[in-house]
Amino acid sequence: MNPNHLVSIPGGWVQPSPQRTLSVEEIAVIVQDYGEAAKRAMDAGFDGVDLHAANGYLVDQFLQDGSNRRGDEYGGSLEIVRACCLRLCMC
Image: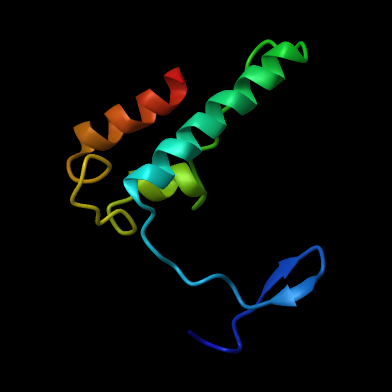
């Protein structure tokens, strides 16, 4: 890791967290969290929610073959990755 590479957080500038592959169990929890957040938005009176899947955010990392090198049910062909994103939208 480059010690000169820093990211901004509310408390100041820090080194970013080391990159690692999420476990299948962690992904399941994140999908559940997305669903619960969407439900809270709907309960608060919103008509719907947007899923931001671009610009390097988490969902985009699953869509990009440069960052998604998984060999499980969350990686591989475009059809598999698309199905995972649809699962996230349906939660």
